[in-house]
Image 1 (tube, rainbow, N blue to C red):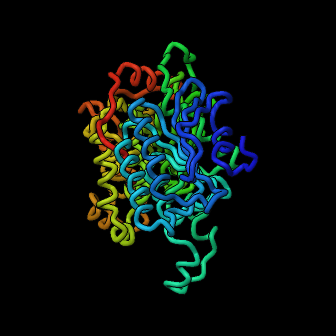
Image 2 (cartoon, rainbow, N blue to C red):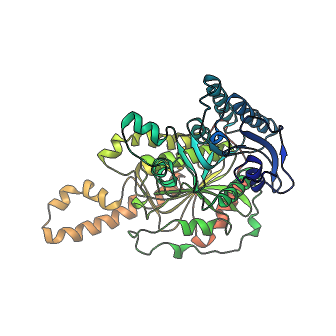
Image 3 (cartoon, rainbow, N blue to C red):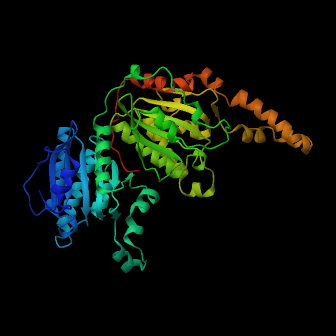
Length: 461
């Protein structure tokens, strides 16, 4: 085995199960090693660039090696894991190196939505290597990882801007700032461990076992009694999925929505949840885009979806409009409307306005829509609605009586227009469920739905 820990076989051996690593080609000058291996009971194809030689730069042969490995994975219907430490195209080789990297991109695009592709960035991934990682389904970054199209020296020479490697392409830049990185690992070993866990969730989905659930598991205590008080949705997510199985992705980027993979009675599901502790759980430009791409990934791999809703609407503001909330919000509508996997919505507290539609409503094809007893569905919050609908009545009473009248009107509006009754009568909500029976009803609904998967790629939205 190679002694240098940056050597491809050394890194690949730490990723894959012991005794299951089989090179797909003899060592050569490609700066790449591709192998067949296993993670648990899952056959995988993996590749690793050689960060110890020429910074892992890729020429035509290296590109051909990676493209051939991806094509093999598609033929054998197994996931692909790439370990990246590469400065991009080999300058000395010229245009042929660009062609080699282009062939990698083409292979990745051809495999998109057909087999899971995971990238683990262990060192610098520049230029074509950065785009190669970004074209895959999930990107994991170790602390030493950096991703950028052009490095600090090029930026300095072209624009005069002074910026460091970490600020330009480190974990905070891409885990919090750009959203390119899905998982920030604590170490290289942790990055490989996270890749293994996500591979199992994507490629070994398991089966639902509703009978394995306890009769009751009350979740109502996890939200505040005061409906205006914010709370973190993550404890509810953790209680709904099997203990210790939830793998959140992109936690720092667009945090008003939570996405991730977990298991429910042994079956892999995707979870999408508004998070009221961040921006009140509003949908906005980034959270819409984040959720839309996750919906498409799950749909392409046949992973059922659980959608937890507590949303006051789309975040208002001129900046949101300028940033494309219409275009980006439409991505989430399109993703849910196109999806064919089983997908259950649970309205926890409120679902208002256009965000009600976007969060997997009946109109977009939800398999089932459940609600907790105190949940509200409305065009907007009752206070805002009353101030519009009863503006003249409120203006016509003395100031000292206005608050009392507004409170009465709000309560009346909540009963008549903001409850779940109309939704039940129209068939837009299937059932009001006891929080203690939530896990069972969700599992039963997902298990009863026919399995399906979308026929589309997973374009990086």
